[in-house]
Length: 215
Image 1 (spheres, rainbow, N blue to C red):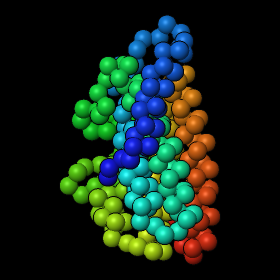
Image 2 (image 1 turned 120 degrees about the horizontal axis):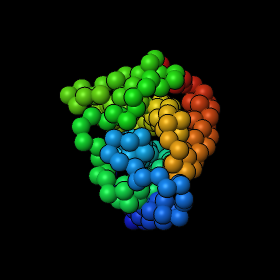
Image 3 (image 1 turned 120 degrees about the vertical axis):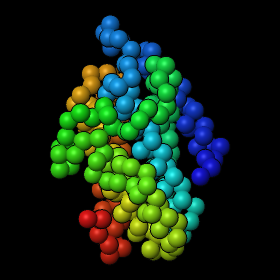
Image 4 (image 1 turned 90 degrees about the vertical axis):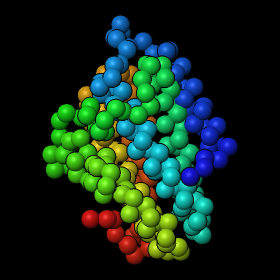
């Protein structure tokens, strides 16, 4: 997916804000987060998680004919790109790579509540590509999304995005419970607020279309 100029600007603004916010916040004389820490791992993995949501939202925005779906997709795309920018700004400031080395979610060493004791993304597997983070769509599901149109596209997009948000929410809750970094706590509050409202909206939209969330 090609990110448009306006959305790319949102990403760059977010990255700049992320760096300046982290510089401005006094988190006591704590050391800079290191590789393997909750802060670095969260920023790396949640950026990847968000970017899949951006991809799915961009597809729905461009291919749905339902104004309500298009508006929701645009809002998700814009919000999550800005949040990705903030996290990538942190990683740049901390001199850490944008992607983790090795498998994702090594920073999550304890089970996530409500996810059957799952840690390190072992609950969802992408054929041929190893484990996925909670809520993420497989390549087969993304291909199916791209193959649909009309109401079928709208419903499957809502189902995938609702599950995606639920997985991201669990990751965010884990991070805020295991980190004292003020900037991360502020971002998690933003994620939980925006995604919580969107999850409620998507459930109502599915019901209005005679559909249910994915099992």
